[in-house]
Image 1 (cartoon, helix red, strand yellow):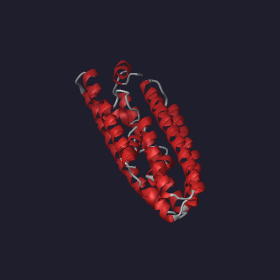
Image 2 (cartoon, helix red, strand yellow):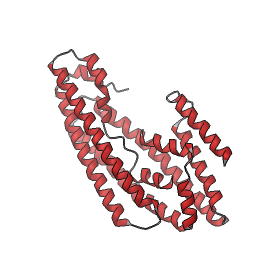
Image 3 (cartoon, chains in turn purple, blue):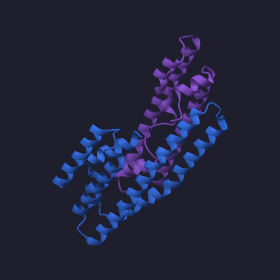
Image 4 (cartoon, one colour):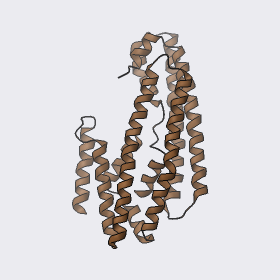
Length: 122
Length: 148
């Protein structure tokens, strides 16, 4: 319990990644957009977002495991923890950048009106 | 302890059965998980002064957890809002991501200090016993926090 708790708090939460909810919009895209090439392109981008989010979560789970092992014992190992933390942020930066690229790519295939229906504010 | 674990199981069942209905929240689950942890500390540490110190540290961890849950929700809402706006610029997203990361980084040193304080308060045996504590509520709270 304690190690898991310290890991969650240290990493600022869990594995749920930034904007990965976009990938869950497949049914909304299918119902809002007419069946054409643009819709097909949009669905391909959603697939790429989902894949990237899965890869990221897999990577973060590995980092969590390593960090958990480091925090479980009573040893003070700041270098190991700093190294894990650095890798975590590198993974997070790369993920956020990729997912934003894909988000803007998706936008190119969707009109303003369609976007409002697919991603309502509430 | 048996009574506590039974209580945890009831809460976990409620959460599983009422997810989204607002009957038992993640906050309730966390509260029970930390109660379980306090109970474990009371069993593991015989020395009253150290027990009090360890319980105070758990109180701090519980506050950190609650803040984190609220922060995650806030970040999630902000992310959804930014995404919903067709005209949000890349720079606005980048600023949001940077500020989220900075918030997490700021917290890290404090969490490591809390761990050090916990280690200093316990013997290796006590630490081992408390670390191994894992009731249904604790497991469910950890899982739920990951999935927010």
